[in-house]
Image (cartoon, rainbow, N blue to C red; front, side, top):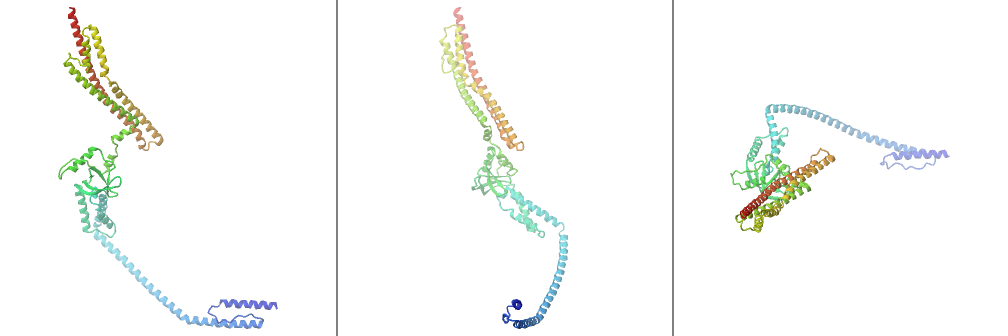
Length: 468
């Protein structure tokens, strides 16, 4: 009995499995029931077999009905493939024919062009060079954007099949002729100058050929990169700026002197990078400042003594005209006053008193000259001190950074050289001033000694007469 139940269960599972594999459209499938015995199971199996047989017949019928349709679709696909293959063969033939025709036409074009192709190659190169010349030319400051058309021509000629027309060649020729003409002119035109702080100033600009630009009494520079006019960070020395005034005041046709830069800005940029006298003085450092201070003190003392000695000399000359009326406002008058007060003493006593008076006047006449002389000697010594300090700084820079970069040594060398220069600049005039002042003081002392000797001789003569 248990075996019967197992067979029934297996058969039911088979039937259910077959039922799930059928399409969903088979809604009329007989309902599966549980078989209670073998006869019932046999009946169910037969019903299922009949149903599946009917389904398979229906499938065969549908397949036969669609077989002709599939055959027709296959024939259409084959016919389309044949047509496309024939079309591909025709296109391949046309392609090869076009390739052959292009080759013939290219050979014909090359043979007809001949050396003309070399001409257009040179023309393209000239157009490219012209663009570079125009972009870097100062003339472009007056005519901005004039290189755009030439640039477009050079780009068009870069194409293999593009040749320049007669009008384009003439345009390039005219542009070159205009460039040559404008480089020989001095013209004034309105423009915009970009200041150092970025501000823009509208003003009149003077263009001197292809060399320099001038605006508001100052040199300005043309930047090829930005195609704009830029103000210089600082101007060159006054001897160059004075020529700008000559140019701005010149009338049409007048020839004036003007400092031009044939390198179109390169020399000017180097010139303004040079240090001014003030900057060079600052390179001397503390030693240089000390030398300058000593020089100023020495010059002031020399000027004071020069004026004082000049006044003393004038008073002495005036006193020499009236020796009988001694005036105490000058050394000679004071010496004459001593003589007048001691006429009755002996010659030796008078000589001693006059010598004492002259000795008393000598320090007054030589006052300050010793300090000027000391400054004239100390200044070059301090310059030598600054030179030693500068060389020490230079060797320190070499020790730290090596000799690969000269700028690292420039500071010490500049200090060394500048202090030497300052020491000599102070020493030379102070030595000359000391010599001049010493000569004037000695001249006054000589007058005093000469007059004293005369007075002593006169006293000796008077004493001799009284003894005789």
